[in-house]
Image (cartoon, rainbow, N blue to C red; front, side, top):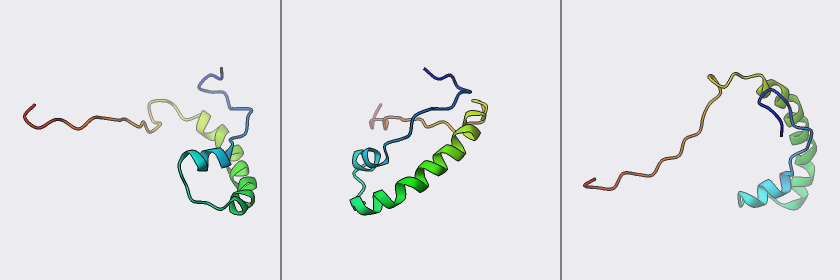
Length: 69
């Protein structure tokens, strides 16, 4: 498993990501976008790997409070 300062050696499956997010992108458009997305991913992955954890944006999820609680 890669540590926080290591980069991934695998490419993302953009078609599966689009499908999993239920994005309505035609297959032919995904084929055209994939090389650009791979290039951007390769360019930004090393930069993102060097962002210290204390400044990296964190996503948090919460459940709305019930009324009267």
